[in-house]
Length: 310
Image (cartoon, rainbow, N blue to C red; front, side, top):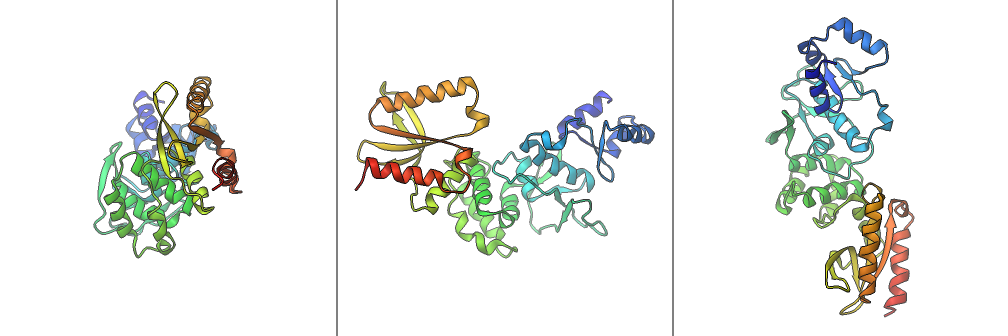
């Protein structure tokens, strides 16, 4: 691949357009040979994937951004990333595994959705910004478009992530809720917007919190500040107050953050320091405990009854 085209592909999750290939000196014949040989794959008309790794073996975040780029490249330079694709390009976490490639196009004319790529209607008043030199709706509009199409778990997760990362403020999230009114599917989401919390640091924490809320055990506090035995201030993901000094803390460990040896050592050191203080009881959970069967909530309820039966 010519170096200039390689740079372009790297910024677009491995995807390139026919026009970009032509500008880099890759002829139509050469492009056809690359596809026939299996080196590249055709995504849709005019869009090709130069990454040799099978799509199903790539990280989920890459696949989300790849969906966004597929739609942007397929519908041309004026296309605008919207909905879940826009959230992916803004770096918002918590999206479902499969994200439909989608974009909006002012004055779409005769262009229609194709090959699983969705062309959305352009929203009047929609605000956009440039991300990697392409137009992307602002996070408030992206949430207004995406949340009505998501289930509760993923909807609250992306709202939490947007707040935590500072992509939107609370007032901007309220504005997104207003922008979503009248959209298909929004009626079932009205209560979800109030559940969003800027203190949730990961989608796993959001899922654990929602499970506890659904079982009548909402945590008293998130990111609980706790001094350990040496007086060092540490934080617990979710906390239930046992009395004036004691807490039950639930720690939610994500594999991508906590599975390295250094992370495991840090987690162990932190937990030992908190427990040694005598004021903190810690429960640890992973993604496997969040399978929808209430494992986290049952463990919390059982421990609360043992430590503070009243």
